[in-house]
Length: 190
Image 1 (cartoon, helix red, strand yellow):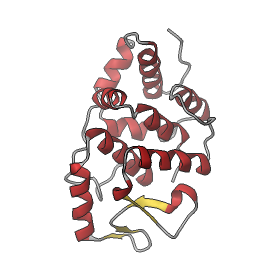
Image 2 (cartoon, rainbow, N blue to C red):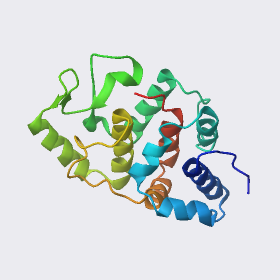
Image 3 (cartoon, helix red, strand yellow):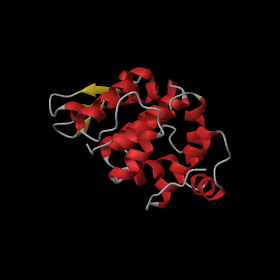
Image 4 (cartoon, rainbow, N blue to C red):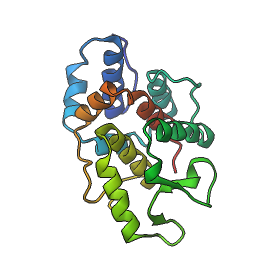
């Protein structure tokens, strides 16, 4: 198996797991163990600050159609692809502020005054609950990226406590792991 050079143990475990899965061989026990012990939220939050080399390695394992670049433009293209591929447009809205991905935020929220709309938020959560698990997993990842951390506005009272290993297997099996990897790798901050 290819050696994954990476300083961060979480990123190293994820890269080793993905590389093994892509080669059709069992992932290293240490990688599996670490991913079994954490939730998807913790995995995503630990990957928000990937260095450029780790991000490039992750992107290279994602079978991307476009060359790797960590920029607002490139991330926005990947974000739009994820929203289209997984039909997540109900959960996200355009704002009048910002360019590229910064012009998108989770719906049911007035970004300018920092308040959510209770009736729209109830609809947002109902739409979220009605989605398939892979849609929920990618949507929560986008919300955590938007918040640059944990969230208690949109993700209260909705399912989002998956084990990281289970979420990765599920996203792989449903064909959305590559777009998830690209989101994580190309994330330039919100």
